[in-house]
Length: 313
Image 1 (cartoon, rainbow, N blue to C red):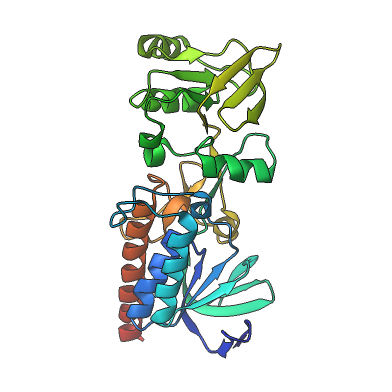
Image 2 (image 1 turned 180 degrees about the horizontal axis):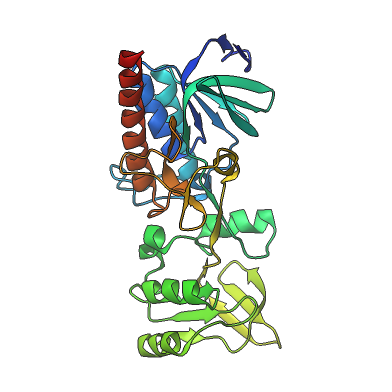
């Protein structure tokens, strides 16, 4: 079968591995596999959540922090310098054929012996336009990961959007960074008596009404509540959950864990032979360092599995 790609990456033959997703997990796996002298291609649609990160201070080795776009750019160059092929595109279909896998999409037809799914997740956003969203992220007025950047919000006035168990948990976590935390419902508050008690003990305010809209201004963020009340903050954390990019996992009938993420064993193997998963698509702590660790395990396991299969054939 011919593998169709762009002019720079076009080649024929059977891949050892196709990696779907070019975020920190997918690119780490590509670096490992390329250094194992494996024939590997990464397909990426350019929507990694890491691209949203204005500056990460959790990546070891970057004491001044590093932007998500720059980190991915460095990782792409590193993967390519060892021989990994990177293709911009999107896989729409993944099938098993004659003991191999065939992936199709974006004018591509790729045949491979094994697959690593590193398709990640998508944060649910508040109702704001794309340009405002990007600008607010860059100024630190909108944040999605208190584990990543709660430190940068130390002593700030913080709003947490989402008055449910998820929002309560995030507000309580952020209480370790600031005494000024307000929880705001985006529709209606769904908080039980125990959670109310936890919020009261922590001194976390529950807004009197649900959110109507946000206004990101030069010096602060205005939260307009239904009924006209206005509240003002330094930064906002949406605690609205996320959606997994699980289309290919479902197409392969993979076992799912926690209802939406791919279930894997300790070696990142999924329930289907030849398919591995790494990063935020796996139920775990959504952090770049964790995704890289998943990928290192998945790539090494895949390499060793292929060696064993070859020895038996």
